[in-house]
Amino acid sequence: MSLILKNTTFIDWRTLVLKQTNIVVDKGVDGGISFHDEFDDIVRTESDKIIDCKGKFVTKSFAIGHHHAYSALSRGMPAPTQPVTNFIDKLRYIWWKMDKVLDKEMVEACALSTAIACAKNGSTFAIDHHASPNFINGSLEIIANAFNKVGVGHLLCYEITDRDGQPKVKSGLEETRDYLRNNQGLVGLHASFTVGDETLRNAVSLMQETNSGIHMHVAEDRFDQKYCAETYNMTVVERLSRFGVLDSPKTILAHCLHINEEERNLIGNSPAYVVQNSESNLNNAVGYFNSTGLGDNIMIGTDGMHSDILRSSQSAYFVGQGQDQIDFLSAYYRARKVHNYLSNNKFVGDGENNLVVLDYDSPTEINDDNFLGHFIFGLSSRHIQHVISDGQIIVNDRKITNVNEEEVLLYTKDQANRLWDKL
Image (cartoon, rainbow, N blue to C red; front, side, top):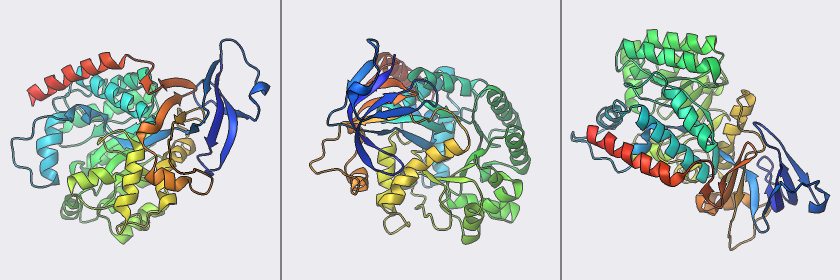
């Protein structure tokens, strides 16, 4: 059985050239697509699934460069009882308090709801950064299974940190090693100020042993630099460079807000990738992303705020006015850079047979010359009608196909209430 998209306007995600065509979509991980000028020229069988896309636009689906699925049950949770006056307070009294409560069922609920949200917002792949200090062993497999059920590809890591003591560090390293034996993934770290030299050394050693990369937060808040200068007499990026974190093209550095010119040069001259998270930065009042000197390896993430990469890409453009060197084209290519990251590093699950069908009701013409204007000012998740992952339809007419979304949401609400009661 083949999946055939009939009467499409295809937007090439690399060149932004539009063409009228019919598409045959291969099934399977990293499958391809083929174009046919005439629908009648396609060899078809009775079992083929045909979607008439007349008046619709088809392009490659999206992917999220940095996510936190574990925060999915935080929406609407009770406010902290302690006063929160800065970013470190937010970590201490909100996120570090919440992640300690997460158990197996809560982690599964977070992953299922996040995967569903990714799919319905047009992302068929997510790079996730997980934390659940009192449920470490097996946590990554739980997340992977949930994403697999929905049909969303993934690149996971567990956030290793010293803040909960050395036994938790050991468990985080063991969980990572166990998971990477049979799965693609990364070695996760929280941030320099919660990762001592021994932990950093062990994480980099594991990165090298598994031919992986480090995924961590870098200079999200000024405190990260202050702590590093006082404790190690160097900057955050200099420290990471000395330990070999920047050596891997699989390494992902999230945020990178409070870095100096020398640090920018270290990153820009390395194969590592940077991921910006503009909405999260605004929410936490930690500063503004500036791409100067960082090179071209810049992706866009949602940082657990939501699962809508279109929204985050548009925010990156708007927030960047006056703060960053960003225009329509660079905003678009940052959104798409994650595909290069995954492909260049030979990660699977983001092949050409990952597509979105857009029911885009623009009042103005869309063509080869003006797509970027539509990307910034017009497109939104409400235009996503169908989503195809590895050649399979995972969203059909805006409805999830692989799991019962109503049942999942009942489950996530129960788990959220359990979480909130424990808080």
